[in-house]
Length: 352
Ligand code: HEC
Ligand code: HEC
Image (cartoon, rainbow, N blue to C red):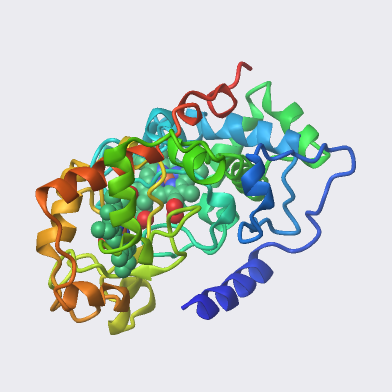
């Protein structure tokens, strides 16, 4: 899987992003605000394309665009309409409604720690953040706009030509620059400062209480959650079927590739800020963490033909969770909330 995606990413990058759009001389490199332990963690290597380095000016432009309704057909939606900062940039609605009022079939994912991700969307269809950003603007269920209309609108907004010049060297406004700037901004949405981080990486043994510690132990051992939700990011860069349904109505990766063995496989979500990103799963079917845990305890469809090999403990009937275990696991998941991130003014709309 991983090899397939990497090859795909190279092809996609080569097709869509010719090298001429490289660093602009007068820009300022962006300094990512990482906790010390994350700087030292050699497993954390950002996926930043050589032709779209992160700069202070590019991030400022991306931030303005992210919060601007001018990107949607009728001026009603910005990226932030569905990706809300208070919810770690996820959507509190099960499925989002687009600019034309129609509803989609998937839950909007949180936008956090994407600088370390290699594929995007529930079905892994976008292989870089640059490519990802092209989609919502045009998608009729999302912003329903077209690039000609968007670039025209931005040209008529007095603040944009200066922002584009600062980020890219001149005032030209085009879809590629918009996507590049959005990607730069999205990479700065880093959330690694939860109580769990204080406990696990900063030596504060008092950061978790007894119940949370019990939940943590279950998560990392007999409940097998860590098999796919691995720290520090609590994902495992894979696309899996966890047995939500015997036969998934939404094919996920399988709809993209046409491969029967990919049917019902979805991107493993991060569990960081999980208490803020309800509802849960690709279709937002569960409203609470308790419902999610009850699913893992009681309802995994072990007969699902494309069930992930990491679900073998469920097939073997090994995952047994008492009421106490479930409550403790939920308590542990709530320690993954980064309360400063969701009110950090650097990620909100800028004064323009
Ligand atoms: C109408 C609601 C809506 C709007 C507006 C919207 N999104 Fe999304 N976003 C979604 C949904 C729904 C998904 C999941 C879709 C899927 O996986 O098929 C998603 C997924 C994503 C992802 C993938 C995250 C991951 O972990 O793989 C990124 C990145 C993203 N959106 C960025 C943006 C940006 C940038 C904009 C503005 C240009 C935007 N979105 C506008 C609803 C929206
Ligand atoms: C086989 C890998 C795997 C294992 C093991 C696993 N998960 Fe998941 N988890 C996933 C995937 C994949 C999804 C998304 C599934 C979907 O939407 O179709 C998910 C979704 C979730 C969600 C919802 C996330 C969101 O943003 O909607 C939570 C919460 C969660 N898992 C917690 C747990 C807990 C707690 C355990 C242990 C009891 C666990 N997971 C075990 C892969 C796994």
